[in-house]
Amino acid sequence: MLRRTGSARTEPGTVLLVASDPLVIAATRDAARRLAGLPPVLVTTSAEALSRMVGPGTAPSHLVVESGAGSLALMTAARDPFNGTDVVIVTRPGQEPPYGLRQAPAEGARLAAALAGRLPDNDSPASDAAALAAGLARGEITVRFQPMVRLSDRRPVMVEALARWERPTAALGAADFIPMAECAGLARALTQAVARRAVTELLAQRQGRHIRLSFNIPLSELLKPDLPVWLSRLAAQSGLPPADLLLELTESTHVRDRALLRRALLRLRDAGFGVLVDDLALHDGRRFLLDLPFVGVKLDRKLVVAMPTSRRARAEVEQVVRHARRRGMVVIAEGVTDTQIWRAIAAAGCDLAQGFGVGRPLPPTALRAWIAAWSAAAVPEPQPE
Image 1: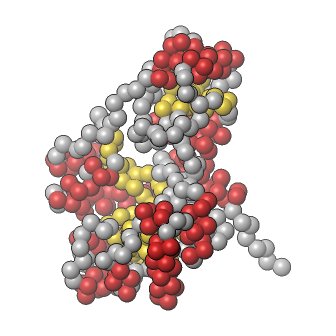
Image 2 (image 1 turned 180 degrees about the vertical axis):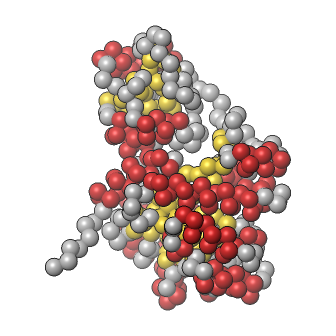
Image 3 (image 1 turned 30 degrees about the vertical axis):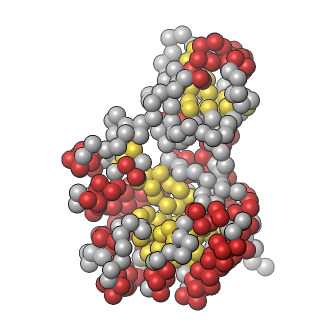
């Protein structure tokens, strides 16, 4: 049987096979031949399969793993309901599949049926605020890390924590429950849950490397006078320097009182925390925010994707970059998916890149593999003479 994760794809990926048993390898190749349009099977190692699952570019369409052959990190990534890859565990009679995954026998026709099968996506919306409150109490809010690299040397420097609600019966993305949380008065509890989980996971996975963390926060929470208090407490308890914890002001609420927002930003700055303007779009009505004491701005993915072919988009980004330079702000380009976009944002003077071309949202246990892969490809730091 096949567990479906993610939404339908518009292009085929690769079938990754982690196995050493010749019978399993032959059965998987036989299954691929039986299915028209299934991509070629690539026999690989557990480490390489993990790298391909969490690295940049198109996700593998399927991961086929011989029972017992996958590493702990690979199996954790395989269980992630947001990973975009369909997973099949091939077992011998009497073997039990790993918890949370389903199995198929090492036989071509039945394995082909598993590879072709589909289960409904777990994308049903949250039922009500009471269910979310209960989920918060039970620790069901988790995070995925969307990584960022520095354009000048391709070095990993930051991750954005994306909220997920992993209910017993469904795995929900942020859009399915965050608006409800804000309307139901649960924004503070949700923000704190995400921040605590993200800080804990990052410190466990970054292996001593200097990787900063950002997470979204609504305007209503940003304006509260006690925000620096609980953030400082979190930083002190975890040992994470306040400068390594950045907040991203979401675009969901219109700013009506600039003076009030300025005071909030200064309070946070005095406590050591920086705030980013999130998702600045083409001709965005929030451009006035760039005159307030933010530490940086994130460019909307639609604006970034348009840059290689749109002179207007390039001019807009170049103008934002010039303004940011004058104010000592960092510019982060979201939606970076290919080399054309990378060249365009680099030419415009952006500082950091984020998007599927850098890395897909990762379960925390996959962060080490992503950091190692990008660190190996980074421009070497100059050695002291």
